[in-house]
Length: 289
Image (cartoon, rainbow, N blue to C red; front, side):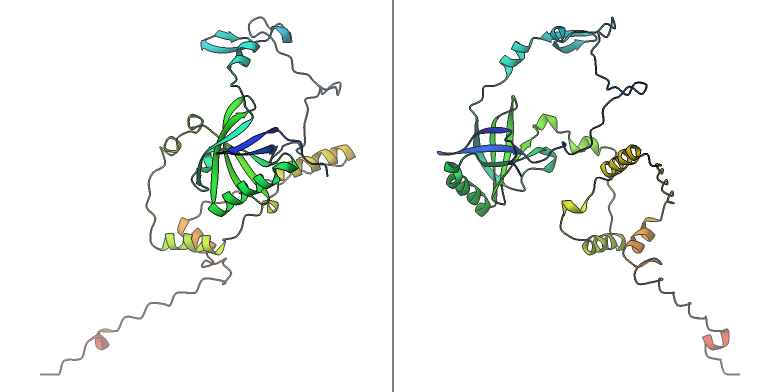
């Protein structure tokens, strides 16, 4: 298999240690099924065309320009060379500014994953030194550089024989959690309900295996395309049966194997309550006077 094409090449700099590196995309959508817009009548592919919102007339590429809306239907236009001048200059260097614990960054700040490796054989020793230093210290490096015309913050961690480099969202790009959860009431769960929840979690603990998860939509789409191409009948999937709302405690007990459908079989029957004693046996007889 041919080596992946580098998305970026530059230098990783920690203090006075400089290492030539290459950045590779860790995730790609190129393997997904691509669907195109097609004219139903002719079977020809449809091309997108930009038109003027007011006149409805097509606008040629040379007449298209970026604009920022300052008021309703009023724009400040920016020429390509003006936008280009705003792009920060790049020295092609990932400058490490700090080392932090690998768990210090909340996942909501993660943007895109990349792999970082040495860009030539002469860099292998310096690269290994940086990688093993991060691994030994259980630390991650925070660096900045210009990537794809923007200044990006990058989190760098040891991964196998290389490094993982994750671009981070800026603080202004991440919505505050308190806004998302503003309408969620704070309910304290305790007692048997909480113990059952902990029991279920502990019995289902395992390791994350990405190969165990399948893109069911992609698989169904591939089967649909294949069936239509081969002229086979397409069976519509049966809609799932609606589930009735279950009592939360009953659902927990059943999930923990304590209900009628649990692995231990039907729930044990409760013993009938003890029969109440009769008046004669309930209290000793009084002697006749």
